[in-house]
Length: 398
Image (cartoon, rainbow, N blue to C red; front, side):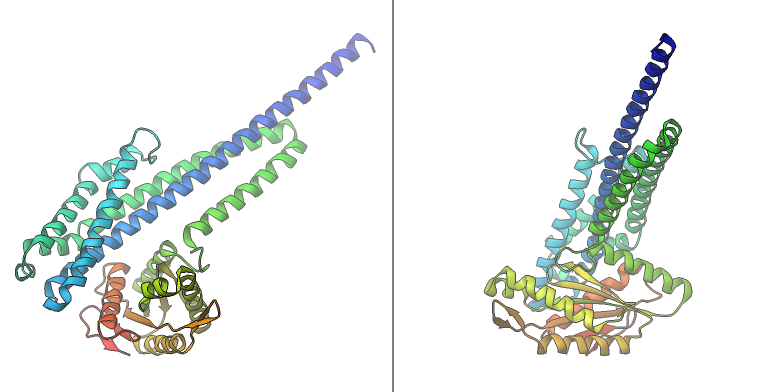
């Protein structure tokens, strides 16, 4: 081979090696971005779940405080215990979130804009939540006869309507904007790398990029499923349910029509676990899920809030129709023992039902009324359906 041929081979080898280096570098960069996107989505999902949980807890605390203030003496103890638990949960959840945001290493990747929502005016969400928690703690120390007209109760009810929901919404929106911006930057960089990869060698791009995209899509789909699916039942989890409930609430407010929401709770679920073991409790949860799936429509949304509590959304369903469906479900559960280890275990459910109301500022108002109806069903002896049509309407037992 002459000198020119040797030089040509050397150039070809150099170009090929350069292409391999570029492909490897691009593949490595794509891999790092895929990990970053998955981590970012996981963090965004976790923060969204915390934000939604804080919002539910603030509404629950206000509702429980009002219930406790008006409760008869014999019903104060369970209401006070539930309120203390909810206040402690909110305090711990919020403190963990703030610690994660302020930790210098290994904490949440909070942007300055997110920190401003939490720590600076006009929202100062951290300060608002701490004041709300403080008011709840002071309310619990009041004598029972001073709770109904107390300033602490008024502060809790006012904050639960405004401005806490607005501040929580602002925090959620800012997290979403930051997540979208980060994802947009990663996608833009990914596009540049792909273009460079194709420009260097189309064949290598074909065999390197496509498998990575498939893995990326699978990781994203798995992440989305994990964020909204309950692993025990395969139905929606709390976050997925709240998303579905929010969409249904917006649809009703925008286009009219009606919708009902129901909170379903297995009666004496702890006793099932204590008596027959947690495997029996899991089987009871799965059996209830299967029964509900056989009863509801494909357009309904059903899932597990946690423990033995479930949530059902019934679009375009008046209160009377919803009560009939849920009473049928209640009877089927009561008439069908759960088989665990060859032993039949009887199970009943209590159900609180509410319809979307024009008085509700958001879906959490409807959920709160459904939970109040559930508490009434429990207090009236369990194994029953109690529904309310709208804010201020009298409960109807079924």
